[in-house]
Length: 267
Image (tube, rainbow, N blue to C red; front, top):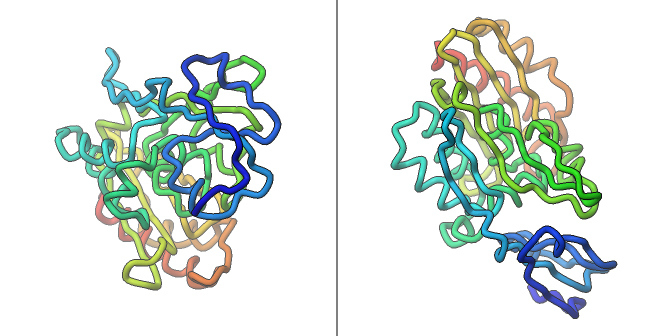
């Protein structure tokens, strides 16, 4: 879709270029930006010139994922990696309603910043305790758990002019076993429920509900819970919603069933 209202476009090369003028917005992979009308948008600030596409293991063994890393590049990296949690990165990339062409352009940071319920990079990072480096419009820098960034379906807690610089996945989570389930009403439809989990080396367990709820639901246990406990917690979780791709009751029911499967696999 053409953005007929856009009159200016500039490429950011440093932090000073991230100050947005009235009518401007950031452009990362632009896969969402060009997918629908953008009323009031008159200028684009391209983040591609900042070099934020690193994928690197730091000395403690954490994985730093630059915000401009494409989802396709992350999936390819995960496919080559022997880290126990790497399969979850690839599985979440494949959970998006996106062709390989879109995955080659869409960015990890953009998927998180848009904060759609079905944003599978949110699911991946929330499950692995990902923390985002957020460059605030006022010049400060905050470390924000990715699970806390979504405020609603398609609404984030990021302020106007805030930018995600990178997401760090800690070494302890990368060493965990993971599991994944996904369901949609249509074979090639957007996720109606995305259930993910990890079991750490100390036996503790994290289970996450996304796509079915407006914001991520992160459940933490000292050990892998029983199926009955998982079902009860999933049914009681807040935020299930109805839209053309599924009713709230359907999302709640399938989430409980599939999250119990995730826990069983981790056990």
